[in-house]
Length: 188
Ligand SMILES: Cc1cc2nc3c(=O)[nH]c(=O)nc-3n(C[C@H](O)[C@H](O)[C@H](O)COP(=O)(O)O)c2cc1C
Image (cartoon, rainbow, N blue to C red; front, side):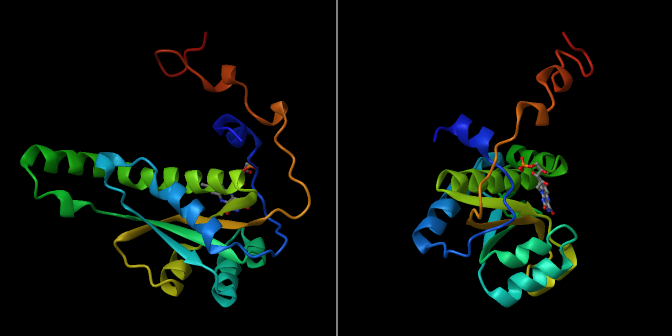
């Protein structure tokens, strides 16, 4: 599958067959996260692989739109460092760039790239996933995530139960609606 095909055919999958995801497949998915872009190549993310049934159930109970999470046997919770101040010892210009990037939440957004990369990689490997917004407080507590980490979300994974239908053209806003030229609001 090429990149465009993967992007266009990917769907959120919320039902799985229960088939185990091998360590090899899981590594390939995590690798895709590892190769994601990030400000100054800081790679400020962490991926917590959760396979314990009880833990997954606890997360699903508190996820407002994620009760189906209980049906996966693997999910990856993505966190990102809130502060990148450990890098500030280089020089003043570098330090000020780090602060500036932090002010613009750029480190946080890089973890979104990592999640999306893993989602697409999983899709390419024949697995279906769904981004599940997990409850901040419960997830932090259950997974013992330190306060210096922002919880981005989780990627629930598995082999697709049934068939997945790609979005129809109609399901997507047309470019004419979402693209502006030169200034916000200016359409051609
Ligand atoms: C930031 C973000 C958070 C999401 N959170 C949830 C969620 O908590 N539960 C859920 O069922 N889907 C969640 N989704 C999946 C969206 O519902 C889904 O992407 C959207 O309906 C479009 O469908 P598609 O992914 O099949 O294209 C989330 C997606 C994103 C990008």
